[in-house]
Structures are given as C-alpha cells and as structure tokens.
Image 1 (tube, rainbow, N blue to C red):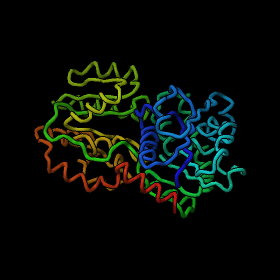
Image 2 (cartoon, rainbow, N blue to C red; image 1 turned 135 degrees about the vertical axis):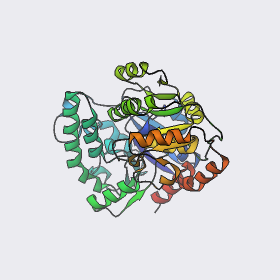
Image 3 (spheres, rainbow, N blue to C red; image 1 turned 180 degrees about the horizontal axis):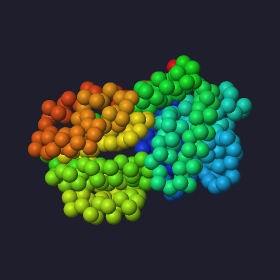
Image 4 (cartoon, one colour; image 1 turned 60 degrees about the vertical axis):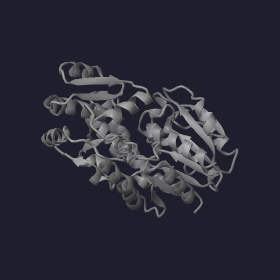
Amino acid sequence: MSAINVIAFNIPYPANYGGVIDVYHKLRAFNHLGVDVYLHCFEYGRDRADILSGLCKKVYYYKRNTGLLSNLGLTPYIVSSRRHKNLLVNLEKNNAPILMEGLHCTALLGEKSLKDRRIIYRESNIEHDYYFHLAKASQSWLKKIFFYMEAFRLKRYESKLRLADQIWAVSKEDKSHLESILGHSNVHFLPSFKGFNNVATKAGKGEYVLYHANLSVPENDQAAHYLVDHVFSKIEIPAIVAGLNPSNALINKIKGYSNVEIRANLNEETMADLIKEAHVHVLYTSQATGLKLKLLQVLFNGRYCVANSKMLHGTDLFSLCHIANTKDEMIQKINGLVNQSFTEENISQRKPYLENYTDSYLAEYALRLLNS
C-alpha cells in the first residue's frame, strides 16, 4: 500500500488539541514511510495550513455546512455538517483506501460508488458517551439540549459503523465495545499518534504542578474548576492551569488564589516546555472515554503523573502513574512527590511500556493492517 485517502474532521494543524494531534502526527508518520497521502480537510474555525502540502501528495479543503439545516433530522450534526458533494468526486479520482478520521467523517459509509473501496473507520471516542458527558458538564441549558439530542442521534447512528472494512480503535476498552455492539470481526487497537518516538523526560525536580487541556471543552473546564477549588488551592507547591480558550469564570476564579496561575493559548513550543519542566502533572477526567492524548504527552515528556483511574481507562499504563480518585488522595500524592527527584531509573521504567505507543511503531502497524 503506497497511497491512502485521509478524511480529517478539521484542518489538522496546528496540532494543539486531542483529535487533530492524532491526525497530524499520523500524516507525518505516513510521509516518513513514503506513503502518498491524499488529505481531505473540513474547514471549521482554523486557517488553511501550508505545512500540510509538504506532508501530502494533495490537500483538498471543504467548507463545513454548519447551521440549522445540518441540525435537522436523525443524522448526527457532526456527520451531516461534513457532507460535501466534492468530497466524493475527489475520492473517486484514485483507488487508494479511505481512512475516515472519527465518526464525524463517515457520511460516505455505504456510498454505492465506493462499494469496492477499502474503508477504515478511525475511532477516537464512543461518541454518544462523550456527548452525554458533555451535556452533563455544560452550564448552558441550550447546549445541554443540543448535546443530549446529539448523544441520542449518535447512539442510533453507531450501527452504521459496521459498514467499514476495518476499525482502528484508540483504546482497548473501545475495541471491546465496538466488537460487541457491531459484531465486527476486524477491529484493531491502534493508540493515538502524538509525535513521540522516544521518552524525553528530564530527570530532576520541577517547581510547579500542572494541569493542561483544551479548556474550551466543558469536561476540561469542569475538571479545572474542580482541581483549583479542591486540590491546587490546598497545596504548598505553585500550580499552573494551561490550555486553549479558558472561560472568564475560570480566569477570575484563579485570580483569587495566590499559588495558582493560568496560562492561556500557548504555542506548541511553549506548551511543550511547560510540560517538560513541571514536577507533577495532575490528570483528571470525569468520563472514561477514548485514550487521553495528554496522558501520553505527559508520560513521554513529563515527570510525575498523578491521575484518576478514568484517565487510564483502556490502557496498560496504570503502573506508570500515581492513582488518586478523590481530592484528598490527589493532595496526598502531590505532597508526597514534591521533594522527590524524578530519576534516570524512573525514566528507564517507562520505556518498555511506551514502545508500542511510539509513532514509528504505530505507523508500521497501521500499514500492516492496511495490507492484511
């Protein structure tokens, strides 16, 4: 297999939040292996990126059809808003397999003119679960209604995914779910690509605790509020909350604590440095869905990781983290790590667990699946 079509739900650069990180670094890994990638991007709130042309044989852009009309009917909005007539036209220009990045990009599953094409669905979340949790986390009643409605539509739509020839699931738990629900015999565990091929953690000690996330996502905003109120405000070591588009409520809350600081909308390099220099990373989630990219980012590049069990859902990485499922356990774990240096031995312990999560391994495995 020397060529592939990749349908991306958004423009995958800059690679600064969950889903696009996986897509962008998958493109880089395929390019490194000499695969010709025909990239099809839906435009939504991000500028076109020239860097993608250097990684791909051809890049196509499509306007996402947002608005009320795309929200009518029983097809999920995230799918119907990404239906574009030119996408099918461009896919028919070659005979390469088609990789649909996320349920968002599956509108053409079952299309008659593609019946002889190999189609792969790349799962990144059990989407109806994800939207149900977004509904619970949202503070806006209008958003709650939309998220609950979308969760219902996504649950109903899920059965269509059995039309894919292969499914690449982001976690072992999601793999089991899809095999059970769809009765699909060709589901494979393929963790997220994230740009790492080596453990680059620094030995020694840092001077702060860090929580980082896309803070515009309701779940992450809720987690940040929880950590600031119940954990970061109760510890001696300084704490930093960092990420994209924090709410005014979160910004104002953090201003009330002398030992907590917010860093908003950092570029990729600055965020990488912030992660590398932190002493303890606190990873907390209220929903056990998908594989959290920030977990892998921390384990490849950061020092100590304090995480709740849901953050490690569907992985074999529990032994690399300090598990804390209550606020008191988090405070206790952080306080216990403050004066401990992260050693070369700690770094060596991570390496065998992370070998199968490197981009080079994942790209070679993906090509074996495509050629099987």
